[in-house]
Image (cartoon, rainbow, N blue to C red):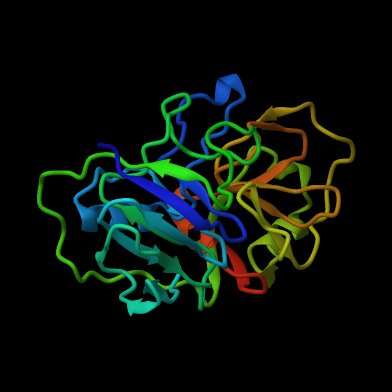
Length: 285
């Protein structure tokens, strides 16, 4: 019989995420998937799940869940208090949640996104090969609401990882290595120096689509706009206000603002956990 999770408290924004929809950009479908993919994989590893099994990604305020049968779960990613039926439970290690008990994932104490992995993974129906919620296109399950019921898959028969493993902490300073983008020549030499030498901050207007920045604008060498062209994960697009935007997993697949640089994908996991106001530097590399 399928185990079901009832959403008692959905929190500010909780979505189902896995490794995303790769290979569909030519159809206008973003990749989506967990913004902090290493946290998703580590939570799954601790439970013996497939590394890309679907998990819940919470934003700032956590969520609360009630299984109808006993389950084992791991809460990782951004540090936060964890309770089972009101009793403190460990963060970052497997926790047994009895049937009918409430697993409460509290507000983060640092970082942005916590991940709730459950043995067997969240087994909502896949769309284009992924169970991920895509906020831009609307593909996949809608963001969770109170009262939603989620099915779980069968727990893996194999052994899980050791119970205690190190989790990376949220960045005190976000450092994003970049390479020149396809439209770097649309900016002045001074602007390119500014990008890799100036101090920026993470904007509170950031979301799963893009990490917005606050700091000095980049001056263009060319006026006008581009016809829409393909966009990739990590593209640093510069809108008319001149302040760079780093495209994250729900980014549009095309855009008309010039891309001055591209962030290496492994660095984007740290971007997922950078709170508003976090100092940010772009570096060549």
